[in-house]
Image (cartoon, rainbow, N blue to C red; front, side, top):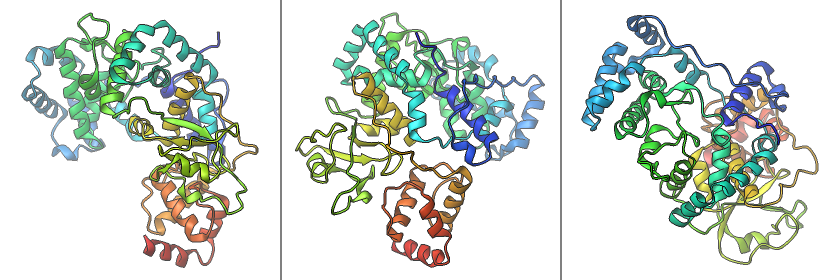
Length: 456
């Protein structure tokens, strides 16, 4: 049996460290082999609460009016009580509700890597994970069948998230959840969000699903084998094994039912419809393929994609029907191509990283029996990290909002790239290229960019 690789969080931790050391172009290369273990857990603060709060204030608690952590925590407990949490649950949780600057440092220092989709999917949707997903479906056949009947979510979809998030429970994190939540709630970056997550965690304790000591997970407070934040846990966890508890850390049946419930009712899954299918796009169409139509915001009937020459990977024709689909090119026109259906929105809602969501959808198709995706006939050129940052800066100068200038081409950056490709008369496939960067660096780039901004 293959040795399981770390779950998604361990890989992200490894990739972040690799990026930090790689200085530009090396950041785009594959992870070093073998995999390194995830970073060690940060040490809890051992100084007095007042000293910890003083350090926290230096990190910036201006959003709380400069109040001490102790006072902030007292007010948060009052909010929890007002939301219906019992004093018993608050008292049980209180020993674990301590500030940890190490958690805040992790949150502020996290980086999303810009690895190409084929590299990321090759690791995270590896054959061993596909096989383990299929094995879990056989082992827990009754729970999967019940979940599909009740919620309409196919077993492969549930199993793919289960495998990506924790390697089927092998890698759920090792940090006390309450400590993480209150530390992030006191910090100003996402304070309101984590106040709500802390209250939800207390409600989970109050409901009897988990004890405070059992609440151990990722540094960001996610819990269980499919890594639910406490609000998601409280709202969507179900007791599928009938023991009276909703236990997403230890009960596979509860994990399966709860994940299906969230996908169906939280992410609005459409029963009986596909989510992602690999396709082949014509590269040498006589009339030129309309690459600007390859966008998740654009849906065309499958009959229209078929008329444009899009086929299944083996050359078979697409169905000549009206089912709407978007053409997804995660690495531009020379990389893999997929039709993304309405259900693909569940993946982008689960995690808005295009690389993650596409990998999760692709892994689900593999678990369901699809063939491996076709590899590009030639390597897809990818700009090094320093040039991706430069391109983002030029896009910002042209008036586009690309989010954080970090070299990671998220949806905002891809949309800006597409707009400039159209302006310069390049194939508008949203993939950043050296040709586009050269044109934006050129002497006429300023006037071209200004004209493009005026047209938006």
